[in-house]
Length: 251
Image (cartoon, rainbow, N blue to C red; front, top):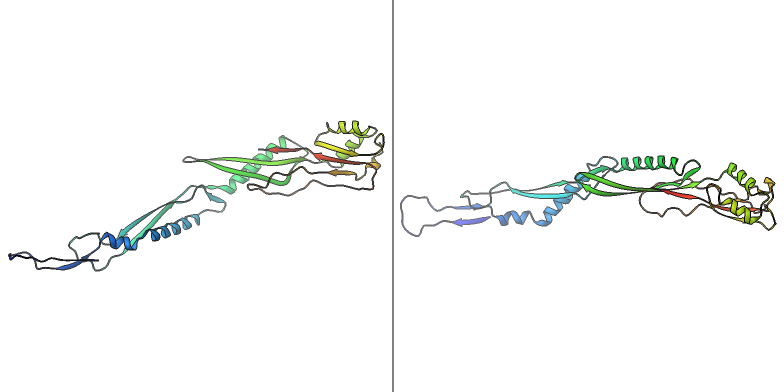
């Protein structure tokens, strides 16, 4: 509070007697509403804003906050005696929120539907994991660009193994290896056999397949996963085939 004393040095008639009174200065207000206090109020408001998000929602940007300072009494000498005043600091924050969970569910459905057509039947999502990477294009109007990718791997089951045995039976290792290059779902193969031609008896191939899963997608972004390729091996059998299934990525 500032104090002003009014005193007339020369005689005069009329007028008012000298009076002392207090009034609010800008320094009084600034002493209460320091920048540190305003920042604290803004941070509290930003936290409250985040608390209003619905389940699955996410802010597209950090809250933008503005603070305002008001005194219950006018600042400056208004020839009024002010015995007490209060200073109010208010913060207003705004941002843009979007349904992140809903977006990820929709993108997963779309990519899965695409994979059912290409690569198609026989392929399964490796580790049941889809990586989703959203990127905000603009806030007004709100625009979101989403990149999604997964790795679909061809499954080689009992039926395919029977077909492979029929395909390579009676062939040399070189001819069998060449034949396997054209078999759907096999990217590469190695046949371990010391004889001249491969046997045609399916019993000699029982449990001799080792299916190697391709290198999975790098661990980045947000995804989910289950389901590995089956591994069947038996070192007692005379013929071994090591195959690497075809892996196709989707986006």
